[in-house]
Amino acid sequence: MMMTILGYVKPNAKMFTVNFLRGNDIAFHINPRFNEGGKQVVVRNHKLGERWGQEERDLKGPFPFASGSTLSQQTPDGDVLSVQMKVLCTPEAFRVAVNNIPMFEFRHRIRELNQIDRINILHDVVLTYINVETASLRKNAGDGAGIRRDDAGERFLCNIFLQMFQLNRH
Image 1: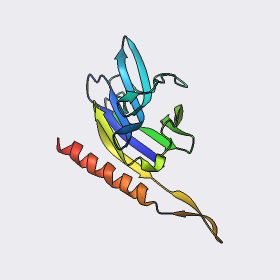
Image 2: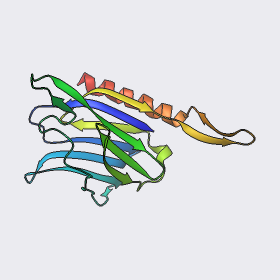
Image 3: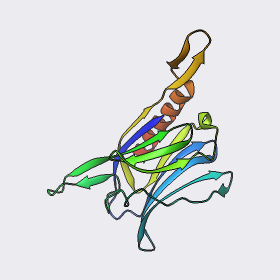
Image 4: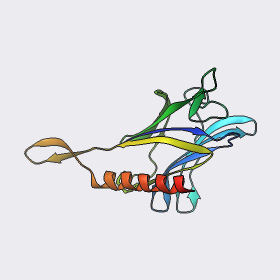
């Protein structure tokens, strides 16, 4: 699964959050914070039941989001340019890139990836575009590996669009 998110952050933003959900659990939590004790950090974690796991905060480079506009940058004329955040789910980890520059990976702590059925995007961000690409490989007897439509992926996509609709109504 590959998710592409475009958007921009509200003025004076403190943080935004992207959660990949499995029931009441959070399989993957991304939380860029613009001022945590004077520092900009991107916190990653998971939550099983009511218990958070150990936070990860290291990045492969500097804080990837422009101050005051997380998923956007501005031209000298003040026009907003969308910036791309991509989340790739591999069998081992979630890999995240901003503007096609790898930022971090988060090794799976909840292994039942096929049970991730929702995403929520919260706080000080305005979404302008989301795309989810899903494909599953299935080994069929006699015809080798093939790509087929994935019902779980389609349910995941439908839930994303329903949640986007609900966000845009508020």
